[in-house]
Length: 245
Ligand SMILES: [Fe+2]
Image (cartoon, rainbow, N blue to C red; front, side, top):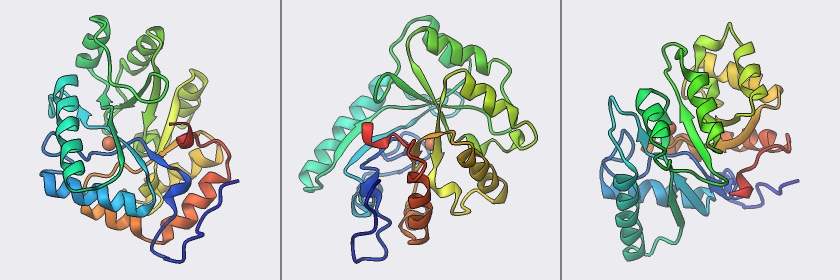
């Protein structure tokens, strides 16, 4: 299994065992993540110090709030790479997107617009935190029909599924992958989320671990050494696929 915590610094949770993070909001000023270049640099440096060597950052594409396009995201990525080079921050930075599943995404699929993906045509997908969207399965199915592999972002954060856990079984049976927010165990999103994360972990449903890092508060939580024990436990499932990315 993975060798963790070989470093003497107790503040380092050992994220080098994952190598790659595939969920974060690090590009400046285009969503609710880093708001300026200096914050982006601070967050990226912090993730590098935590042990990550590759970051696939995923700005929101959520048409009611963040009207990001493929071009906006990729040009901001280019600018950020230039800044990192200038400041001699050595990290492998890429971008995909976190798609909020709504009519807009269905429209992109219908028009056969290429989605921003990571790994083998994987699409990070989220949906409403307030109630399950009626057309959720239809959109996910359409993605599959176009050879995309949906990855459900932070399924543990949909606390309305607390009393409808079979819904998770249905999503897994349909072939969708699940991504855990590592900070869900750190209490960042509350007790219900942490409980749901434990339930899904016990089921062996998680395929990826992401930070969903938005800000310095999240970075501080990530650097907390207690996250190390949780990460260790997660890796013992033998199912986590971050190293493939
Ligand atoms: Fe996110």
